[in-house]
Every structure is written in C-alpha cells, then in structure tokens.
Length: 347
Image 1 (tube, one colour):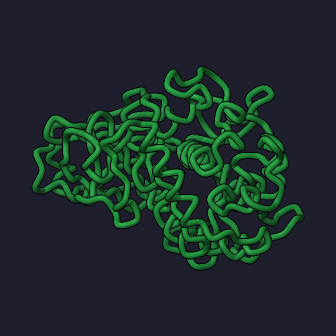
Image 2: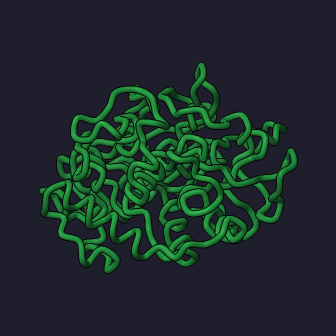
C-alpha cells in the first residue's frame, strides 16, 4: 500500500462517496454472495480490453506513478530510498525500466507459475491489474514464493514472502481481483498461506485479513483509474474493500460507498498530511465539524503507542513524530462512536 494518505475503517463505513459508481450500476449488492460474485466477474471480464505484455510497460508507467509525481514510480515491496541500497528503494525513475540490476521490471503479484495453467505473458499474464513496478533484484528475491503473514518490511519468511506492512493490502486486493477475473485459474489459496475461508476454500483468509488491516490508499485509487484507461476494467476491491466481506465474510473491511453496511457516515475529508512524514511533524484536517472522542497512535501490530490531545488535533495543531522510528503506523480517530484509521508513514 502507498505511503500517501490511506484510509481504513474498523466496524463501520468509512470515506464513502455516498453512491455506487456508475461502473457498478448494473450490480445488485443485495443478492447472495454467489450472485454478486457472478455479476462482478462478468462485469470485470466484459469490460476488459486485453492489452499485450509489451503494452503493460506503458500502462505501469502511468498507473504506478508515485502519488503527485510524474517522474517516479512506486516500487512494490520497496521501503527506503535513503539507505543506499537500490534493492529496497520505494521509488525509481519512471523510465529506468528493464531487466538489469538497479532498474524496475514487471512483478506478477499472482505469480505466473502458480496459475493453473501457467499464466504466461498473454491473458492473465498480461493483465495490468496484476503487474506492479518492482526492483529487478527484489522481484527475483520474491520469485514465486507464496505470501505469508509477518510485520515490518518486505522479505522472505522461511520459504514464503511477506510484501511489507505498506503493501500487503495492495497485494491482497490484486489477488482477490485475479480470482474474480479468472476464477480457478488464479486461486488465492495457491498463493497464500494459513487458514482457508469457510465460504470458499479457494480463498486464503490471509488476503481478507490484509484487505481489512491495510488501508486503500490514494495511490491504489489513482492506479485503478489509470489501468481502466488502458484496459477498460476496474478492480472492485479497490473501489470498495467491503465487497470482499460481501463475498467471503471475514473482517468487516471499509465501505467506501456507505451502502454496504448499516452506517453511512462519510469521513472522506479526514486527511493526514504531509504523507509520508519527512520533517518529524504531521497534521490532521477535516475534524472541525465532527464529534471527535479520541485520537491515538498504534503500531501496525496493534500496540498502543500514544494518546493525543483531542483539541490540539481537531484544531489542526502539528503532531510531532520525532520520537518514532522510520516505519508505518496507524492513527486511530474515534468519531461519533466509530473508529476511523489513517496510515502514517514516517521516513
């Protein structure tokens, strides 16, 4: 997930736009999960204008641009541009693509070899939703390892792979899209470890957990728009992560439309900036008209780190993070008896 502003809801609707986008106007989300799945699968298939694997280069140069940048792409699994190690870079020049060390190439989030049959470089192997800009060496480090749970930055966990706190939600939503689009050719349980879903054993609960735990970022939303421009279809789990809950249960992920849950409160204007935090201070806007009860900082593993002064936060006073190490944290805001979370990345 991107290091810019991200949004997560626990147990209630969050950042809704108040209506279902026109792309989904033909979907009845009040039906059974099987019918919703069938309708969505038809939608993302029928609106998919297949592009070639070569054309995916241009697609990623548009879709994977770092938020607010025209010259750098965000690298999946990357986490540090300042350590002098290109393998761990978060960003790289948009035109520094290729197959050599220090360049970026196209990482298949759902590995080609784990598809049934192999995804190749046509069809699902050339679906831009499944491809992410990635450092060449880091791409090789991941290879076709299955995703597994951990915390911290990206790397091997035994014989498996953890994509990093910042990117696990991105990966989960891509894997779920690939299952929706290609069905049993791209089974999530074949690329993830841990328990299997009770509604559909083809789904690893790991991805439902990550979809819930890691907020959808503005980067993902912009990426979804850009890929639609190139190949016509969208990733529904980026547009509304609550759809995963509607299909397979699991954690009650954010409802960005405010229509898939009981609550329809709209908190989209709660903004953390600048993001990432590079000068030891950040601000929170959009709280002045809300009933803010509590503001807290947590580690990504759920450890409470700090309680903040509510009046200071509401009045947009600066929040110091000079006591925090580089990494990803979660700002929890209790508003009108609901919990809204924003990702905070300290660099």
